[in-house]
Amino acid sequence: MRLERPASMQLRFSLRSDPAYNLDGSPPETYVRPMAPTSSPALPPLYDSWMREMLGESVPSEPAATCSDCAMCTPPAAVAAGSTASGFNPDVKCCTYHPQTWNFLAGRALNDESPEGTAGRSALETRIAAGDGVTPMGLGRTRRYQLLYLAGTEGFGRALSMRCPHYIVDGGRCGIWRNRESTCATWFCKHEQGGLGAAFWERLRELLHSAEVAVARHAVLSLEVGPRALAQLFPSRERGDRSLTAAELDETATPERRAALWGAWAGREREFYQRAAELAAALSWSDIERLGGVELALQASLLRSAHGQLRDPAPPARLRVGSLNIAAGVPHDADNVVLGTYSGLNPLEVPAVLVRSLPYFDGRPTVDAVDAIEAALGVRLEDDLVRKLYAYGLLAEVEESASG
Image (cartoon, rainbow, N blue to C red; front, side, top):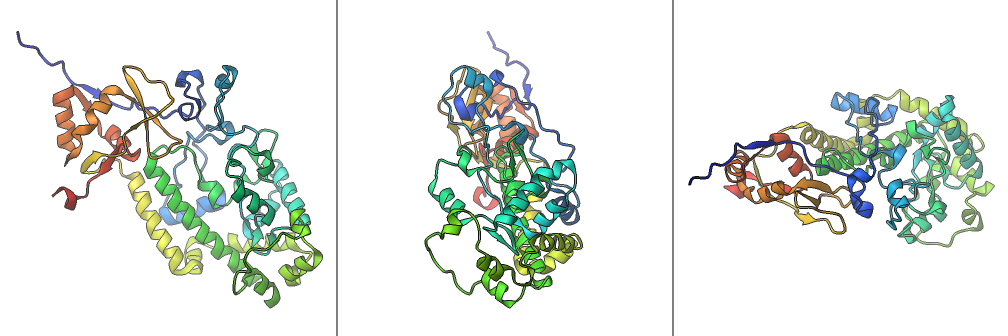
């Protein structure tokens, strides 16, 4: 008797990236998070305008990285069930990182007279009055915080004492969200396009940081803080490790220190930042590229390449098995498996039949591998699914020279 193979079925997007898995192993149906709205730009308004000029469009959002309902906090249902998972503290989330609020961003936040900007303005004014870490370049991290951040390896996402001064406790929001700097604007725990998305955001962070430094220095020079203040801001050599002063332990600054850093602008820090914001607003992206020189030009070239990869819907011409690790400590069944991916924060639940198909990607042309899988297993992998496997690191590209 001849056995007939059933007609092949098309296997589309049945992969699922679920935040519950990497925290406590609870099944995804335990807690369903709402998707973040995607209609607004992913970047702060100023940076969005830069990218629209540079790339011709706004950058994509990351709806699975739900800042308003943190994807890294242990789900409420898991907590109620007695989970001891070590997820982020919901009263902190990832906001144990203190940003460098550059002079022009501080000025934009101080100029924000909207009700939503009230908490951000208040926190900035409190920090300006204290003085520690407050320079013509912007509001930086205090030395006390830097020591705690480096020494407290378990503090990220958990320690209340490390919480950002711009964190709004009521609602867990950011007081300077519309004027956040490059790290806060580009760090995501989840990526819609897996490792391709992570690589894109890292390139964007590097570019924005270079642009921030260029624009902030442009403001410092244009507003003429004076030679003594410039020498304090940009010393010829690092002073090396030294003990914290009493003022630094209290996260304040002495009058002498403020006078040395601010020069002619001492006592007018708020006005300085607002003037810096005006200077930044007058710059086009091409102006910023000129200010940033060859370093920024290099970052721009790398970002355009990463952006092109992000927009390309086709999988690579040849693929091989990449990283294939079954995630430990999470539930599996006969039909589905949870696999580790490019990031420990973003595992994927995949059908078992899909895992069996991966060895067919052995460097042969991708179209031939897909045909072989259909012939052997009776499933047809669509291009969007193959590309997602590649983006998440389960498949890796084979360069033409290596496959020839």
